Image 1 (cartoon, helix red, strand yellow):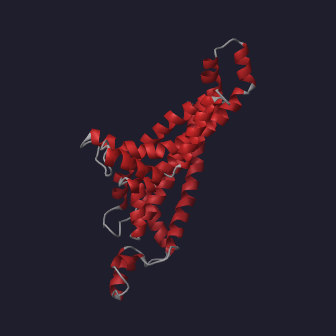
Image 2 (tube, rainbow, N blue to C red; image 1 turned 180 degrees about the vertical axis):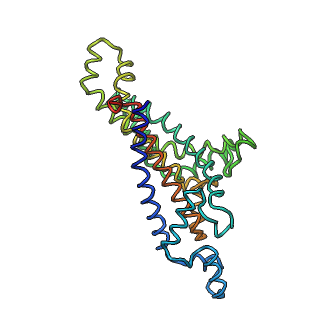
Image 3 (cartoon, one colour; image 1 turned 90 degrees about the horizontal axis):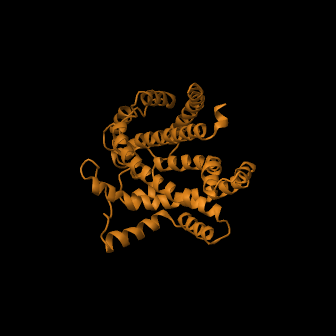
Length: 317
């Protein structure tokens, strides 16, 4: 337990400077975007100069850039990410509601991807060159190749318009209607999960093939162990290492917001909020979104490192 805590502490010590550097880049790149947020908020070119000055002063846009950054990062450390210029509500309050929706979608999609990708990868590796391998590879390539927005539109037409099995768009909180909430996430999860499942299957197959050729697997077979036990008990643990890394990256991307999928299904999560904020030049919301997404990506990588520690006994020593 002490070694695990020390391991996590070292990873956190590396993660904190990464988040700090990301915050600087996010803030500076945001300031380099063309356009004046105060002018966009005022609603046009022919705006009184005094009104523009008041808007810039209200949102701190008249301060030096380094002062603006210090105010922003200082507030972020206390959970305050500014105020939306468009809606005039706290960015933190706005993001919390969207994060809950995106987190539900990400968990559902990742669960589906793991349930499809890992078993298919194992089957493909243990039946290399045979029909099962070819079918699994075909399924994986299909999931990788089909664009998310196109698959989403097809699923809406088939299962929402013609069959009327699922709601075509929108989001209903689980507390209001659990069944409608789950039904609303089925199609978006399929769209996102199948693509990730294809990527996971390809890596799982490759890693499993390497593991099955290892000396310790030959030794296990020589001892008379069943093939199922050799695969699941000995080969799978080592084959999971690269898949854990890939899974963490994919999950971080899901948490950052599945822009096209959320747009197609009108799910009010991170992706849709990002698109709307960029179009409205709501820079405070964009900054908060990118910062929170970056932090979640770092946390997903940290979770992968923790899984490494639990899966690989060599790290414990």
